[in-house]
Length: 110
Image (tube, rainbow, N blue to C red; front, side):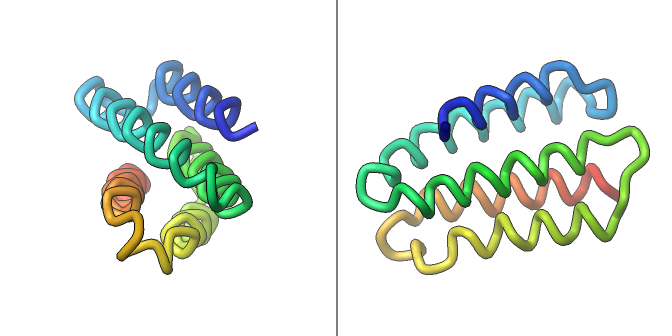
């Protein structure tokens, strides 16, 4: 399920016409890094890994919409950021990747 969600995020990014090539490339790179970190996390914290990928999917969906809803984008990004709270010490790279992903998606929604 986690890998399927990440696959759908990648596909959505590849097909989106609402993002520049540069941003698409950077977002896809972040998803690749996120995949590695979430796979590692899922070995010990499967439900949290599911939450992270779920919120990442929702946030991507909202950011890629042609008619954006700023409140929904903001809500989904806050959920994604919250989903990694508590992992700052044990999985700092995961937190860094998610924070960068949130920032990029938020900037797309402006």
